[in-house]
Image (cartoon, rainbow over all chains, first blue to last red; front, side, top):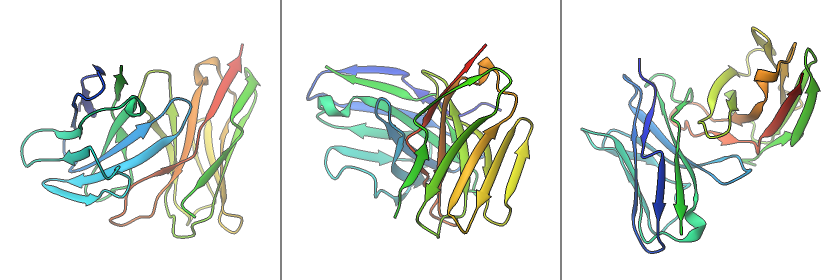
Length: 114
Length: 113
């Protein structure tokens, strides 16, 4: 059973460009979470999605950030007009329907904004 | 109230020793407390987790102790090995539909041979 998959693993963008991060949950998991980790920091919750629904986006910055989890395909975290402060590791986690808090993390996407 | 405070920030232990990492929380609505292990450049891996209806849970060399009245929980790593050297994060969540985890800031553990 493949784990949570994220791509790309590393992403370099210049200021003002868009970044798209993809996450495929574990087979059988329908809950997806996105977290951001700054260097030497813990993970900060950003958004919680189920298929075609955003359940909780309380951790998402109000501007430039958006997330989706379509009926088909991976979940996407989109950052528009990136700034240097967006440089971080972005982790996706998935969980099964019945135990939403038991989350399994992907390897992360390390975003560098030049 | 949503914070989880973790200590120490870093820990050095001799091989074979016991590593102890502590976490404290304020929100009494939290009802799930996992620990994650993270190696450099990797994603966090779920190590062990506990719910408030038990005071201790053991899996191999890893034990969680939970003190509901003190709102504290800790991770004990027995017979620590160099391969345990990693960053450990405690976390907490409110169950039901609110599954998002609140993480501590992490403890960097080094086990010396």
